[in-house]
Image (cartoon, rainbow, N blue to C red):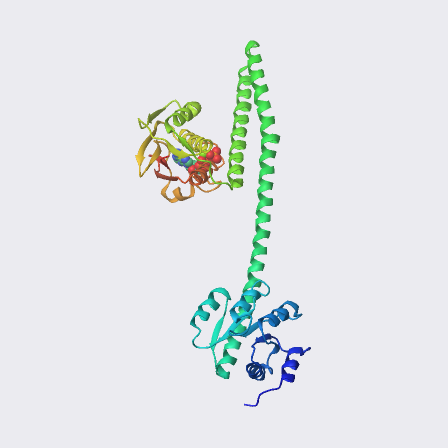
Length: 394
Ligand SMILES: Nc1ncnc2c1ncn2[C@@H]1O[C@H](COP(=O)(O)OP(=O)(O)OP(=O)(O)O)[C@@H](O)[C@H]1O
Ligand SMILES: [Mg+2]
C-alpha cells in the first residue's frame, strides 16, 4: 500500500468547499495509521485529523462544520481515546463515535461503551472493507438519530400547542360556568322569590282559581329552569375537572336519608319509598359533593319514572365495597334502548311522561367513574328498573 504524505493529511484537514455530505474526525498519534485512514476515506468524506486528544478537542470546539463521526485510536499519549470521547459528549452529543483498539484491551471496550457512548469498537489492524462498511452504517445511524431528534422536537412542540389549546378550552368552560351561574341562576332565583311574595299576598285577597293556577305554572317552570341550570352547571364542572378526586371517607346512610327527604315531594302519592340500609355501616371512599349529585339524579329518576308501587333503596356489602341499589316498579326501559341511557342528551321511552333533558345519567356515570366506582342498570319494560352504584370501602 502506498502511504500518503503529511501534506496530504494537511490537505484533508483544510479541505474547504466540498459537496461531501459528512465530516469525519480521525484521531491517532501514529501518522502512518492516520495516513491509511485518510487514503481510504478522503474520496467520499470531508476529513479532519488530529494526533492526540488535546488537538482533537480543539478541533471539535473550533470546527465551523458539524462533525458527524469520530474515529479515534485508544492508546495515545496524555489522553486515551475513551477519555477524549467522554469530553466530546457534551459538545457534540449526536456525533457517532468509533474507537480503534488492540485486541487485548477488553476493559477499554467496556469503558468505551459505558462512558464514551461509543457506537462501535474496531480491533486493530482492521480490514479496509470492514471499515468502509462500518462507517456507512454509522452514518446511517447518525442520520436516523438526527431525524428521530427532529421528530421528537416536532412532537414535543405539537404536544405543547395541544396542551395550551386544552388549557384555553378549559378556561372557556370555566367562563361559561360563571356566566351560567351569575347571569341565569340569579335572575331565576329572584323570580322564584317574588313569586312566593305574590302567592303569600294573594292568599289575603282571595284570588280566582285561574290566578292560583297561573302562579303554580310559573312556579313549576321556574323550578324546571333552576333544575336545568343546575344540570348544566354539573356538566360544566365535570368537563373542566382535570384534578384527581379529593377523596373523603363517607358514611352512606345519612347521605341517602338526606337525599330521600329532599326529594320526597317528587314521588307520586301511589308510590311507597322503602330504605334498607346496612347497619352498622362502613364508610366508603368517595367525594361528598359528587355523591350527592349521583344520589339526587338516581332517586329523582326513580320518582319521575314510577307511577305506582314502590321505590326501594338499599345498600349491601360487595367486593370490598358497598353497592347502593335503587329498585323501582316504574315504566322500565326497553332492552334495545338500555345501552343508551348513560349517553348525553339521551331520553328513551315515552318522553311525555316526565320532563328532563337527558343529562342526569350521563353526569352520574362520569362522576361515579371519576370516584373510581362503578355504575350499571338492569331493567324490564313495564316492570321496573334497578340502578346500582358500587363504591370502594374507605
Ligand atoms: N328509573 C328509571 N326508569 C325508567 N327509565 C329511566 C329511569 N331512569 C332513567 N330512565 C330513562 O333514561 C333517560 C335518561 O335519564 P337521565 O336522568 O339522563 O335524563 P332525564 O331524567 O330525562 O333528564 P335530566 O337531565 O333532567 O335528568 C330518561 O329520559 C329515561 O328515559
Ligand atoms: Mg334524570
